[in-house]
Amino acid sequence: MSKLGERYARALVTGAGSGLGKAFAEALIGEGIAVWGTSRQPDKLMVSDQFTGVKLDLAENFDLQSWYNRTDTESGGFDLVINNAGFATFGQADKMAATDVEKQVKVLLTGPIQLSVAAIGLMRDRGHGCLVNISSVASELWIPYMPVYNATKAGLSVFSQSMMLEAPDRPPWIIDFRPGDYRTAFNQHMRKHLGDNSSSQRVWQRLQQIMEKSPPPTQAAKDLLSSLRQFRHCTRYSGSFFQSSIAPLASRLFSNALNRGVLRRYFNL
Image (cartoon, rainbow, N blue to C red; front, side, top):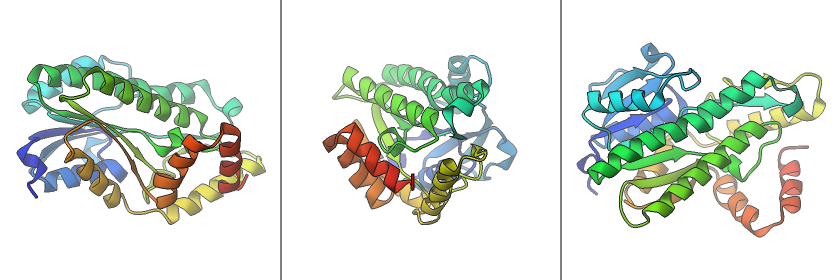
């Protein structure tokens, strides 16, 4: 099997400092692709001859299109972009600070869309490339007490699917990648507002249990490489069998009321 580096020379991966982003970056380097990885703390990024660390905080107010155009020029031109950076806030929606809502929307939806628009424009001019938007099975497997996260991931998937409609048979290819839970530090970095709500505390404990039994991020990277090798638009679920196969199928076959009932049991509500 030929390496993806024969098709893609340079990749931009946001949120490459840990978790899925780091696994994606390492997998791409293994394919012979030079990676530019972003982080709010670039000094903590990996050190490699094929890796260039770049500072980027999607929560800040600045012109993302100009940032992307400048970084694209400095790199020599990206032909693969992976929108992966993210975080989440856990707690009751009515207890969530307005700043928490705004930051999640900027980092998980507005920022990735702006980077997507900038990347797709240059890739179309070149007639080559691939955009990967890391959504989540949470767009269908709704996680209690994470409504903004669920909504932004659903929005990003809809954006990706809509973009696929515009040019169905030619690049740049778009991949709507929907991972489930992976054994990373995602929960540790989450903003939590548990309070004295016993229901939210039970759900949080359940999320911790699920995370401990989840596959390693290298599995997500393997699935992503498989999707990239298709060289076409695609939607890819990745994760445990329940999250990547059963839950998405159930969301399409069952009513919303029935799905909510199943999810309440799944999350110990």
